[in-house]
Length: 612
Image (cartoon, rainbow, N blue to C red; front, top):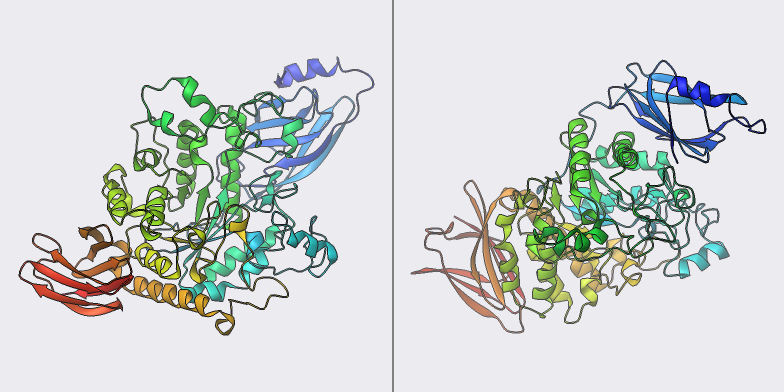
């Protein structure tokens, strides 16, 4: 049972407390600080003996107080925000005594201070922090208290699901490498405190307002943001409103009985088929466990229909954005949360940060399903407000086409459904991520096939994202093998790919190919924001154009052990009356024909040309 107090009812309740009750105590406040000129916050206070307590926060009126039956939690709903920056005192008072702790309202960052958002002009690079680079050799091992050369740290690193020592300082130390490659935006996996074994990935939060000690400190997080912005680069942080970790304190002691969907001992497992959410004839029975089931039957599912936790989760995203100067958010397990919550989430973030962008994980190969979650789409309910989904449909088509397990026509089949999205130019296509077998380890994959896939990724519409290691043809099978340590990021490694001289021939070839394509993309507006037309597609070949203003770029890709001559009609296309003026990348030839172009490509060939 929850007790809701006004000042009068609180006074009446105090006289009825048992004589053995103890003085109240405050252990933690979420959020730990707030800002002036923000929406009035809800403070979640954790402590002891809070039953029947009265609270005061400086001069600010508390609209309502909700205290858990066991007296461990208090929700303080403020009716207005502080107008003047500075410290105030939070006081809690009962008949048995009182306690107080400081709380600060800070001045907000300037509107021009980061929050820039990402777009198709950018290239995003996904880093799983624990597996990229160890910059602080003192916070390693299972509890972040061992040195990198200790027995405990070495044993932990030998565990494929252990904490390997990568941290925020390690990322900062290798920004030269990322910038030289051509990366503009860094996406890092969650930095939440994850006090659980095997939670190195960051997705099992035990405190959503703390940086895990394995990753460093909040100051390290701020330093990464500052270092990126000093280079003109951007920072995207992974956020997880859907669930917390199984060892989060809420699991055994929730602020409210309906804080989660179900309980540790009585819950359903999340269904990973999103089709019912897009089916107007599906009953609630078929939808319920998508948004209310516990992910992998283990991760407590936050109940965003409860106004208190919904407020908590939105404030958490605001806090990380303002505190660390983010440019965007990557949102985990997006379809597992109701659309009404996302609408409110986006509305509040957009009001505070008009340029902030969000990309959501909707892991499904069907464009009709994925597009239904994009901002501006209301055919299956209210607008989520999501800036863009990750382009999983094109990802699966890339895998199929370039490993030889399908056709190049798979690419065209996905792209022709771009009309389902209000903004297909915002989509984020990719080859690999941290949840899937790496391309290099797929049946049928090869270095040449990966180079073709990379050429397609970096010339197709949208903002490409690379997973760390894509640029060096990194292998990896199912989780956790797809999360291998980045070569050179950890003590004692000989294959330090951060240094060009230490790369293997295969690594050097893939890195050179990728960096040259990224350099080309950066200097050709048509490849960043241009319109796209597919002029030709067959089982083994695809030819398309990117056009921006007077700039026209031709891209032709052919897979297979033999070369080919492609006869491409250009009548009533962007290339009508245009001929190749210069070769930009690859090998081959382009000749004018009566009906268009003859494009000659070698086996597993790519040709990119400027047309005039």
